[in-house]
Amino acid sequence: MPHPYVLLSAAVSLDGYLDDTGPERLLLSSPADFDRVDEVRASVDAVLVGAGTLRADNPRLLVNSPERRAARVAEGLPEYPLKVTVSGSGDLDPAARFWHTGGDKLLYTTDEGAARARTLGLATDIVPLGDTLDWRRLLEHLHDVRGVRRLMVEGGGLIHTQLVTQGLADEVQLVLAPLFVGDPDAPRLFGPGSYQGGRLRLLETRQIGDVVLARYAPTAPGTGELPHAADLHWLAVACDLAARCTPSDTAFSVGAVVVAADGTELARGHSREGGDPLVHAEEAALAKVDPTDPRLATATVYSSLEPCARRASRPAPCARLLLDAGVRRVVTAWREPGTFVQDADGSGLLRAGGATVVVVPELEERAKAPNAHLIGR
Image 1: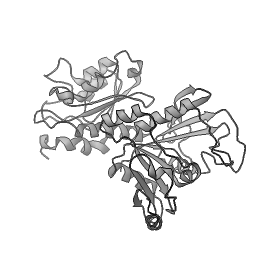
Image 2 (image 1 turned 90 degrees about the vertical axis):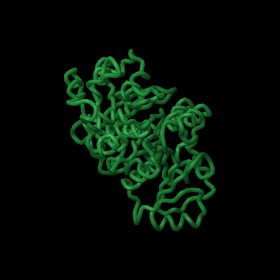
Image 3 (image 1 turned 180 degrees about the vertical axis):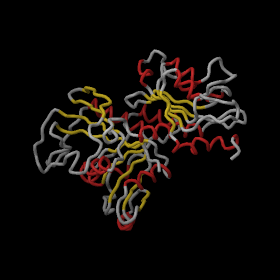
Image 4 (image 1 turned 60 degrees about the vertical axis):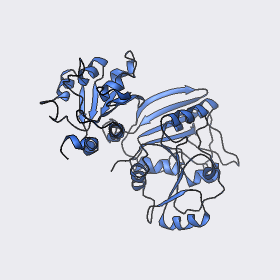
């Protein structure tokens, strides 16, 4: 079952600690990095923290920038991402700032914890997961029921450890602060566990004031390749875009996303975007990217339907537009049927031009859904 793209975010000391044991929270980050974190929060659908972090830090977990909140609203999103916490016991302080700031809140807990949480009158939706906390079930619920496609996890260390050791993390954003803690009783970012996959792939390093951001992606065991989960995430985004298309009896509904090698979304588009009855999804997405952007050469284009190889409505088909833009990797969920064009082979045109084409059959039915009226389903 699909789950959100899971992004772990943390700041640590050089010796790997999240905090010290003093009465006040140890500020490891910098004002400039706090603003970066605010930008990341504004880009996700939900932010998750554990019960331990709620008790220790009493966070608000808000998007602080009015401009970023306004941009979310302009895109049809809630002003704030969904705030999520996890507690096996359900024993949480109903006066905590988490419950009384921002938008919607959600608590995942056990059946026993749900009974306790309800007696506390917490200002939140409560989702029991059974006798134990099941992370896969939790992520599937977030994805399928709450529509969360991108999840930011801000702690604590136990949750980060569980998500990594269970192979559920898609990205780690780690900020290194120039100090040491050295207290064996202080909380660490990662604890003991069965870690698989070997060396992570470095996506980016960036100096932000006196701290350094390092972004990593877990890799498949023994391969050094990015996990299939990343392709699933972005292709699911493309399928969601296809579902937003105005239905047509003469053209497919398709969504497309252009993603840089470091995981940055460069652009997205969908069929008939902007009221143009002829525009294709890949064409709409590419039109939003600077053609001189060097990231195009190593970018991946995710398209819910195989890019077209022939079309009458434009001088060049989408497969040719992608090659001319320098794109050399395309991921799609569904090969184009012969509904409108016989012997369509966008993948063949792309491969002949030196591009790699990956077909992900797990999402084929999702890509077909908004086109059911065209394919006799």
